[in-house]
Length: 323
Image (tube, rainbow, N blue to C red; front, side, top):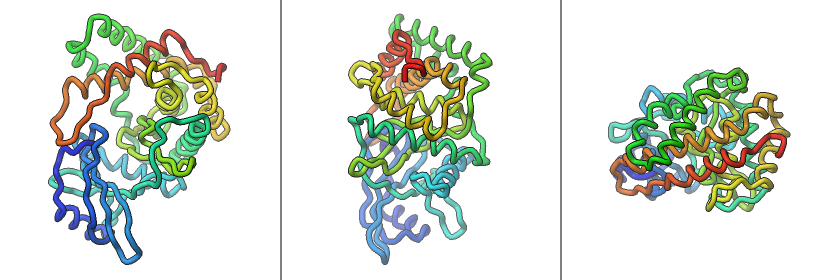
């Protein structure tokens, strides 16, 4: 959510008017993140002041974006607290700013919980299960664009920037994940729309209560277990070491399973999928760190964090029976 494309007050004002959201009061660039241009927007209408997020998409195309935006609209209409894209008078929720695809969504209440306890993890697990179930009848289809095919394409690109030991781990884990993906257990995993990036900074809490998920722009149709693994690799680890936190992980999985019980294939595949989730973000962070794009506000994440997580997942597999 760095600022790659500068938006003027006048451009933001015109968009707000087209969306009937009131008059611009403040436009402020968001510093965190690395994929899109994001601004906090404060608008005033006859009922008062409202907060929105304006996103200009730097990599996703006009053809790809309807999947994400309509998924958010679908989930919001099914009672899942996610940002709801604003429509213009024609009902369109995908807009254009500075020649780039753009969207405006409501800002969720609260703030990030960057030091979650078991209670926070349980709320995230339960809501993720509700989100998966709510997405079952979503009609649009688009694969996880940062899935296995992307890993196979991107690992050769980042190999020149890593040590021989890191390169060996990347190659061996990628081979393992290709082998897993060819198996019958992987094919049996329940699938549907997934968030695929539900880290601590993509959820909001207010007074200890989860108020919603946001940043769905890595979403796609994939194994629901991949979503669970991505969450466990962030919400239920020690950030300094990448080590598994059993209490938080158990709270997350039990709350999830109370809403949607895990299938036998999911319980079998959990250790491999935890490794897959760690590999995916190690690759993407290597790519973003060593091949960055220019932005006026940009802070790339440390790639070695998910290398540590992956090594932990290999050395100390977490089984479903332990949760």
